[in-house]
Amino acid sequence: MTAFSRTAFPRPFISQRSTGAKSLWLAGFLMLLAGLVILSVTTGTRDVAWGDIVAALRGHFDTIGAAAVTVRLPRTLLALLAGAALGLAGAVMQGVTRNPLADPGILGVNMGASLALAVGVAWFGIASAQAYIWTAILGAGVSAVFVYFVGSLGRGGATPLKLALAGAATSVALSSLVTAVVLPRADIAGGIRSWQIGGVGGATFERILPVMPFLAAGFAISLLSAKKLNSLALGDDLAVGLGERVARTRAVAALGAILLCGATTALCGPIGFLGLIVPHLCRMLIGVDHRWLLPFSIVSGACLLLAADVVGRIASRPAELDAGIVTALIGAPFFIWIVRRQRIRQL
Image 1 (cartoon, rainbow, N blue to C red):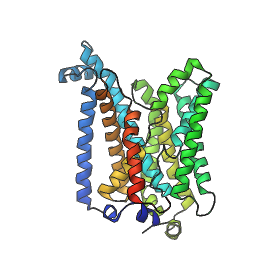
Image 2: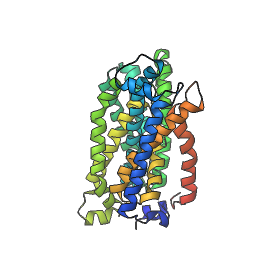
Image 3: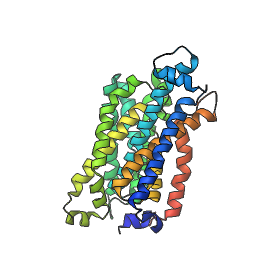
Image 4: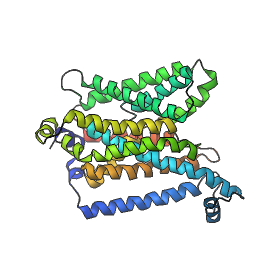
């Protein structure tokens, strides 16, 4: 057993469940996801009836309810895609770094994408969807490499403590730089600050379509890395003994996570803690096998972000609370709980 699995997760959660039990859990989560999709379409400032949903799906927008459904459909799709992407990215990052505290927000990846977009908008006037996506992915990649490099310095390599500290420090620094870039530009400051909160409001199918190829590539690369992540969990020496090229495996899996984080941040802004919460909850249910953990993280991440978006709509009617605020309210206490309960040796 590796130091990662031994210190990060208590023994009862490491035990592997039977395939039948895992399949039942997956079916249950898929049913929950279907229910949340229906709830997301029907719930908001104005509740809608089934007739309005059917009319909207048929292209009829004669009633206010049907018009509301047409707005909620792309929002629901974006929440589903973004939640799935961030949940999967978090699981991959934890597997790549063997760090139970890894998360796109905690490791500074989301904030790197945010700074890149802020600079692109303020200094270079980028406006197209493709430019937004490529800029966000580039920023996420540079930030991820920087944090891992800093966390690897000194004795012991990239320990959970050093990576978490490097990521937290980088996130704070990049956040300050975003403020410095945006502050002199009153014409874009409001939009950038609103986007930085993180949420799925204002989604349209036209905005979602350009990001689909990047998400598809990120999902494919990450899922295909599942078996190799299991080898990395045994430790670098054993992974090399099993024939794995450790550096290349880490780079490829990290590329998948960066694509997912960058593309999602370009659309939704930096939504934090979702990639931390989801993999931990999934491990408690089905164990540490990435061949099951990654699909579970996709479904669970979609469920969590959809639920956060619905809660945000209900909690402050007739206004709305962005999903990024709801996930932060849940994720911050969860992060503290992980640190205290798991008693990770390096912390």
